[in-house]
Structure formats: C-alpha cells, structure tokens
Length: 252
Image 1 (cartoon, rainbow, N blue to C red):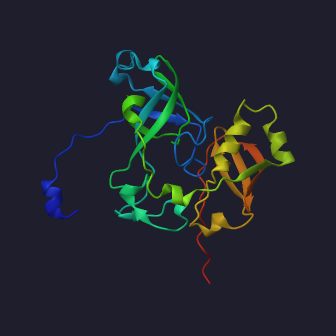
Image 2: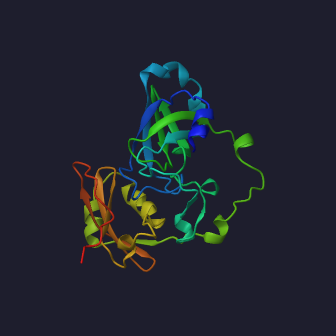
Image 3: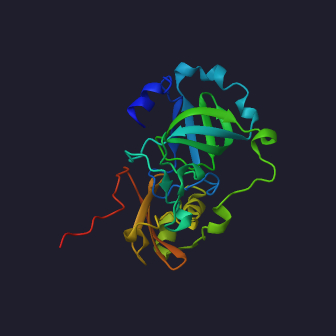
C-alpha cells in the first residue's frame, strides 16, 4: 500500500475481541487446516463481561452451529504476498484470495463450529480448527437456508486432493493412553490422519523423522513412513513449551 493509498484509506474503528478461545490445540503444528476435519476437537469460549453475555447470548443455544470470526494472532509474516503455497498443492502457488490461508492482508479467520451448549457466559464448541489463545472477534449463528450455497464450485481444490494417512499406535502409546480422557485416542488419530506436516519443510517431510505436537495436556510423538503415521508415545505435558519445528541447516 502506497502512502497515498494509506492517506485515502477509511479510518476503521479498532477491533476488540469478545473473548479468547480455550482450545484443545496448543500450537499451530497439529491443528487441522479446516473446521470439522477433526470432529472430536473441543474448545470453550467465555464472553468478556463487558459484552453482557447474559443478554448478548440469549437465544444462541437454539442453534446447532456458529460462525467464529477470529484473529490469526500468531502470524509472523510482515509483508503482503499475493500468492501463497496451499499444502494440498504440494509446492504450487495460488492467489491468496483464492485460498483460506491465514497469511492475509488482514489476518482474519472464519470457522464454522458445532455449538454443543451455552452455559452462562461460555460457549462449548467442537469440530474446531483454531489454537488455544485465539482472539474471537464475533459470533454469528449458522443459517443453512442462506449460508449453504446451491451447487457450489470449489475451484482448484478437487484437482489437488490431500491424501489421508493411515494412523497406528505403538504398544507404548497404547499404554500411555490407558486411562486417558475419553476420545483422546480418536482425537489424536483424526489430527494425524490429515497429515499436519508442512510439505515445503524438508525437516518435517524426512522419512521417519521423529515429530511431536501438543494436544490438550499431552505431548504426542509420531513419525511418518510412506502413507502411515505411527504414534510412538504420548507423554503428560505439565506445561506447554513451544518447540521449534524447523531447524536451520548447520553452517559448513
């Protein structure tokens, strides 16, 4: 944007979150790229008191799904790139506005979540694709008669199908999951089935590389060989510690 463009741009009011999402996904790595790919994923959204949740949430519990307008608060891109690399294009490029990439001029996200219940000032959600700590800017109820398009065309997506991985659990991982919260095994399997790896990251794509991600209160260790992901162990994570997934090559 040129200085003249900035001068002519309208002065929009500041956006303020209505709440911050408490999600089972603790980091970007391992979080599904679209909503409902992992139906068992869960989150809570507590509405800030200044928005009078006892009044502003009245009637919302009658809806089965809601749109969440979010802010991609962990984006690191500092410049605008008109073309991006969607994972399913395996290195190919497409215009940013023909994608749902989080790397946008304004880092806004739109997710359709299942509304399990409304309890007081809190929404209980499932089928999410957002990480813990995501600021939520707005909520809108899903209306199928207007939100579901008739005979939609999905552009380039059908020609670039994203293969699913077979997921297996080692004996150690099965022992680690014994007595775990109901649904955790299925949650891990669904998260890995859609292959969370970045195909442009040679470190992650190396055959058999040991990888890990945080989910709920666990650290999930896995590797991928061919089209099969194997969970090697699932450790208790008393504290979430961000780990770098990309290692810089050593200087020679």
